[in-house]
Image (cartoon, rainbow, N blue to C red; front, side, top):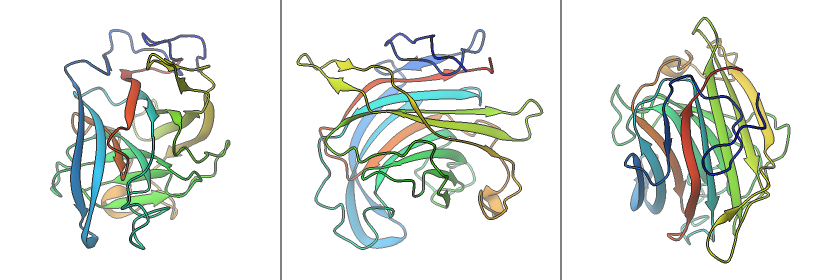
Length: 251
């Protein structure tokens, strides 16, 4: 695993690029940003505002994704309902890899891995599988480095998923970088101090940890062309920096 190669933004790459592989970056034609109002199927009558960044291009399944986010504050809806807030719905940034659309509940939806980062910190729901939308298998994986509260701060987020050589299981990693700030010119500054949050493998054996039913088997393919960074209850002025997604290989 590399800590010396850097991308075009000056951010450290954890895995080398796939030879001839695709890299897409923030600001290009595949990048989009929205701020929209949504409800929850499981919480009738509740409406929240959602900040979403996404890449819209289908990549090969072995991927590394990076984004820095400045979260100035949370909206008033956070904590306004028992099921909206810490360790509940609308409680953090969810990075969704290898998935399809999240606008319907059909068989073409979701089928993604989710690296979840609570706004108030902690490990609850930090690794998830979704299929079909909006059905989740949520897990609390023990952290090698404890993830902190990041409300009002700039935080770096990075995740990677790589199939095993036989394409039957998926190995995954999750990092964060709390060394970042935004300078007086609005540019990101970081020491690239990436801390490993957790490392695991989806074997499909379940064991009460990685799901059952339609979500039990490892997600070894890229189901669709959507890579999503979703933040329910995040302020409208939430900003993204240095976002990228790359096709990668093992060293």
